[in-house]
Length: 352
Image (cartoon, rainbow, N blue to C red; front, top):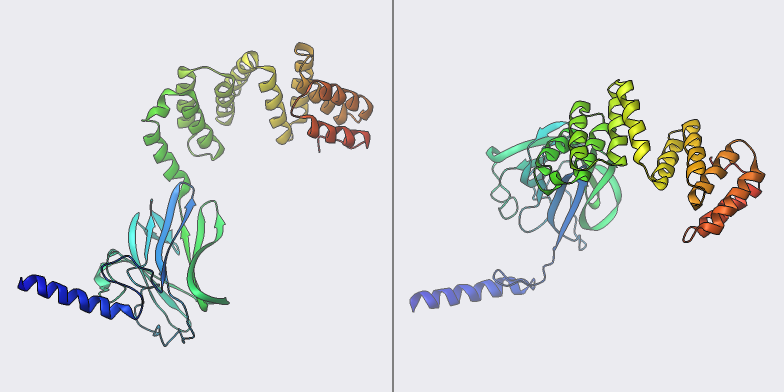
């Protein structure tokens, strides 16, 4: 009974203490500093910031509510946390994957940003420097006014982003880098132990990634061979020919490419030729368009291909005729074909 009375008294004190702020230590109620989560993916690495957003509410913030030279929770309420699903660099310094308590030490001209291994405390009140995983120093910058504290991901590139805290008229930027290709290559090993290993697409997609990013061509070739073992197709034969070509094995590349051409559908040939055009390999593309026209004269895209050949030769009259035949055979593609016809009638090369 005594314990019950003590608990009731404590509960009453908690509710009274929090009533002025419409908050509770035991109930889920609205908070003055509202909760927010923001996530950014770089490559296949997720960066997530979990924080609460204090408001200015007419107060002086810097070197007042938030004193200079003291550790600050970089938000409100519980620890502001930042989580990395893979190892990263922070301002060029390595930091392992994991979830960290994010703290800052503000100053007029330079801020210290702290990544603490302790991510479960309330604010910075029990912060202990011995738990630091990393500290970096950055320069604060002026920014447009922000009533509520906010975190953003700025200056995105394929392998980096700048995490920026903004509040009042101050922005604090911290650059995060990700070594994307090695992380993806390692992930592929694990992914291809799952159901993807039984499909031709999984191995082919992995090989294409390694090839396009020049990561490990020998492993790319190994992946492509496994794709072909699962199911030999035009797609993976073409990819294999590209890998062999990149490895300098020109004769094998040509043999594999010819094998791919022999099993391709007319639409696959057309799409492949359009890809060659995107690589500025017009002569190769035109040769495929001509070959398709001889073998498959009743397909709309075949006539579209021949229109491109004539257009490339400056013969806009015959190009327009071919495109009009394509229009008569096509179904869903009519609006785009009509636009190409107008360009040809204006004597504009549709290959540019």
